[in-house]
Length: 202
Length: 202
DNA sequence: GCTTGATTTGACCAAGTGGTCAAAGGCACG
DNA sequence: CGTGCCTTTGACCACTTGGTCAAATCAAGC
Image 1 (tube, rainbow over the protein chains, first blue to last red):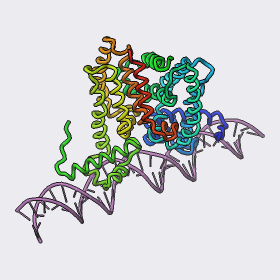
Image 2 (cartoon, helix red, strand yellow; image 1 turned 120 degrees about the vertical axis):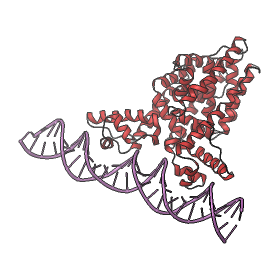
Image 3 (tube, rainbow over the protein chains, first blue to last red; image 1 turned 180 degrees about the horizontal axis):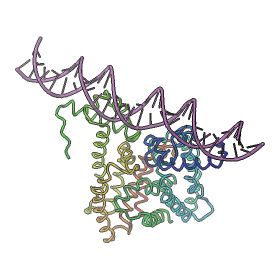
Image 4 (cartoon, chains in turn brown, blue, green, red; image 1 turned 90 degrees about the vertical axis):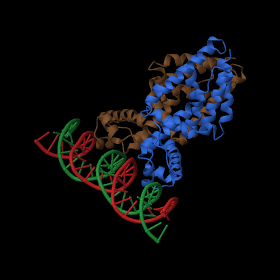
């Protein structure tokens, strides 16, 4: 499924400019809420010019989504049996929280897609994602069996890490409204460490 | 801000049919992604007839949103100082999780609006919502000061309850994909009780 | 059955949208 | 300078969409 590689330097530049602009726009307004004109303007190109690099609005969106899914799961892939259990999990939480802080657009794009029933990535969810989660749930179960962490449902543990970290990116508007604009991340980091430590420390 | 009350029985019935249909459609496709025709069809009315009861698509959406916000915060309003601290909080979590199970459309509609920056309810968030949360954060602080629960940041505690419970409604597609269709709620209820108990029990 | 007001609808419109196309500009290389 | 290819664009099109309107239908009281 490799995309036909862009030949010239200008193609490479324009394609990435468009993807960047698409991420901006799509993450703000969702797929249906975004227009090709908006993306073109954000990219500093004319609409036909944009459509010279991508065949359709949906193609831009799809390319963003699929390249995202990978990046998004990297922190989970890094969860490995070799380290000490609790620090390993806390590291995963921290990495996810960092991503929510540093890549909120990616988080929101993804959230929007899933919120609408993930029509375009259902297969990936039931395939790669499920496989990966199953695998990591097994790792967690081993840690539990070895007495390294308390007994919890591994799946809900993973869900809770996703929910808690992505909340700060996806619902950022709400968080900011309640906190009056104060940066939530330092507090969140400390709170989440406390939460997962007390939940898991044997 | 009371809406001019519907006079006849048929008006009342049609208006609520439309709102129900609007909830169905808007929660699935978001505001921009939904069309008046879709809502009209879901309501079993012709488009002009629908627009006889509501002046515009946005009016339907707004009425849904504002009536939602209230219902949505009821469980938090019920959090009171008089009960025992921990059971009171666990009750709140359970009520919220019940709502995620029983009213997923409402949860998703709300999530979609916030995800897009909450342009239509920013004021309510910074006003009523913030006031309510500030008030309940104070209650939680009292419990902490009285040694009834462990010391945690009250705001992040509330955020975490929102995030964890709504996740099961808003990202239901993802949860189902990973769990292979198995009902997540029994497990979630147990997991969340365990989580908040270990976090808060003094 | 007739009148009056509420309800319903088919036909229509203006604006916005995704996408096309032929022609024009630019650019590297002989 | 010229040629061939890559890039850019203005004009355009078909279709969707939110919303209007005048005319038709219906329902209740007289």
